[in-house]
Amino acid sequence: MIFWSLAFVVTAVACAALYYAGAGRRVNATATVVDSPEMAHLKLQLKEIESDLALGRLGAAEATAAKGELARELLRLKATTKTATEPGARRGIVAAAAVVTAVLAFGVYGAVGRPDLPAQPLAERQDVPPPEMTLDDAIARIEAQLKAKPEDLRGWTVIAPAYMQMGRFADAANALRKAIELDGPTADRETDLGEALMMANSGNAAGEPLALFRSASNRDVTHVRSRYYLASEAMREGDFATAKAEWQGLLKLSKGGETWLANAEAGLAAAEAGLGGDMPANADIAAMIEGLSSRLNQSGGTIEEWTRLVRSRLVLGQTELAQTAYDAARKAYPAAGDRAELDVLAADNGLVASN
Image (cartoon, one colour):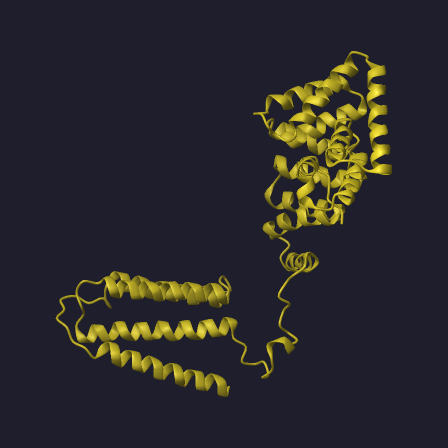
C-alpha cells in the first residue's frame, strides 16, 4: 500500500508539471481541439477499453497497448492541428494528456510490475516462470485451457498436430473429433482424423480411417492426401482396378514437381502390372524391396536408398513398414538437413517423426 501511495504522489506531481508547462502559454486561436469530434472519439475509445478490461474481453497487456495507441493518437492530433486553442481549451487538452499518461503508466505497471514480491534477485524468485517452455509444458498449458474452455476450437486445432508429433495418436484423434464437432467436417480434418486413427492402429487403414478418406475425397475431389490414401489402400488390398483409377485421378491433379508425383507414377505402374497379371515381376519387385531393406538395416546405406525404401513401402500400401523404415533412416541420419526429401515424403504420407 505504501508503494502505491508513493507511486500515486509521484505520478500526480509529474502530471501537474506537465499541465503547468503545457497550459501556461497563450496563442491566437479560432477553434478548439478539446471539443472536436476527434477528441470525443478518443474519449469514447478510452471508455470502451476500460469497459472491455473490466469485463475480461481484453487482457491487461492488450488494454495497455490499446491505451498506448490512444496516447499516440492524441499526440498526433495535437501536433497536426493547424490552429492553436484558446487558453481554457488548451488546458483541457493538456489535462486529457496528463490523464492518459497516468492511466498508461499505471496500466503498464499493473500488467508487468510485481510490487508484492519481496526484495530479492530475480533469479531467486520462485514464482517467476522459466525463460523457455518445453513442448510438454506447452501441451499441459493448452490442456488446462481446454479443460476450462472445451469449446475453444483454436485450442483443439493447435493441440492435435502436437499430439501427432508426440506419438499420442489416440489423443490426436480425440482432439480432431472435437474440432469437427465444434466447426464441422472438412476434407483436411477428416483426413487428419483418418491418419491419427490409422497410426493408432499400427498403420492399418481398414474401417473408419478408410471411410474418412473416402468422405474427404468425396467432399473435395481435388484433395490429394485423401486420394493418395485411397490408392495406397487399394494397392494393399490387391484391388488393382480401383488403385489404377485412383492413381490416374491423382496424377491429373499434378502441376509438376510435387513431392508425391514420383510415388503416384510408381503406384500407377504397379497397378497396371497387377492388372496385367505380371505376378513374376511383382514378386521380383517385392524381393528387391525386401533385399534393400535387409541390406540397409544390416549395413546401412545412403539417404537416397532409405528414401527409395520408404517410397516403395508406401506405394505397396505397407504403411507400418514404411514407418519402421523411416524411423531407422532418422537414426542413421539424425541431422534434418541430410534427409530433407525423406522428411517431406514422410510428412506427405502421414508418417510421424518418433522421438
